[in-house]
Length: 420
Image 1 (cartoon, rainbow, N blue to C red):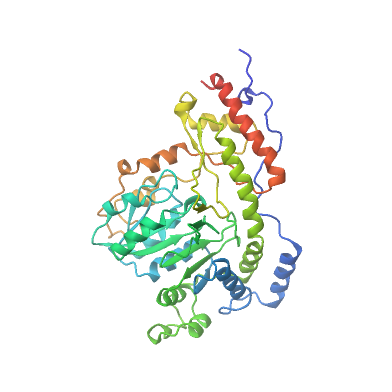
Image 2 (image 1 turned 90 degrees about the vertical axis):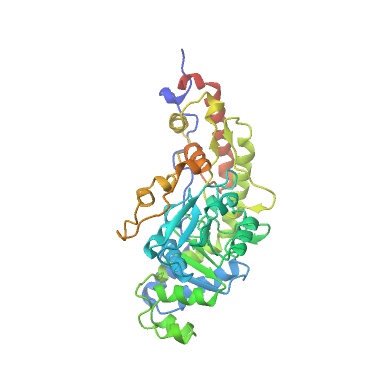
């Protein structure tokens, strides 16, 4: 038998060196100049001033001025901790969130001694399945966290009905969903509070950073006191019962540095261009994947705008490729020169932090409801089937590369016996 696949040490089909997704883009001269000027001007954090204020104001505009308060943090995780604290999560409360997402979308709630209840996801949106939420509700349920996974908005109509019906708090984790819209409305403008990560891999990036947005003054005040003591608390918090804590805050320091704010501010300026490039590339990629019967393209309804897309994760249907295991397929694709992997992270119910029968941070806090793998069938499917492909955005250069990826998928199908 004469082998054709690079799996057997033949020449790869794709010659372009890795990585194929080069991110983040290099800084331009304006950004570098401002960073250098800030170094000599002020490297401290003095309330809501300078590049911190500029970034927060610019982010309000980015959200169509639909939020009243914006608050920067040193990470999206810190902003989520502040959100959970600010809405009043407490010991014994229950927070419902998606079973398959980045672990830190929910884990800050462990610090508040809150019990996290994992809900299965929807196959198309990859977000929490609203049809499975109500069965998880108890008298202790206080809030729901929606993660707009990989940039795809959750089914917000159904989720808003549930939070209104049961008087629950709603947190949006928009870390993947910069600029994403559900029926014309921006992600981050639905919940009581929303958080955007500005970590390096995000479309709007600070290196490390996060930003909390809300229209609720009390939530803003409590979140500010958690991580922004002194000047900002004294100047902005009007409630006398809370303002008296201005000097100390509530004991933590979670502020963003001015350097990170400058980087984020400049990446925000380039967002429109990045978004347009990703839409061209990834919609084209998605359409071409329809030619591959063993790949299930990402489903996007007409009323969904994927914003800047965070990740491109179609599903591998192994029954359409003679039950070849995903790991073997990925290795074969990689040897053909493709940039592909299994998505990082696994079902949260299988992570040690979530799987224990007690809160590892507070050993006297026991779970009353452990995660049930049997009830997370869609999360299991996506966990075991998804492929992680580049989030292309340079249309002129990447279109040819996308075409080469499609040819590799076809080559694998034509020569599948070599992998059996």
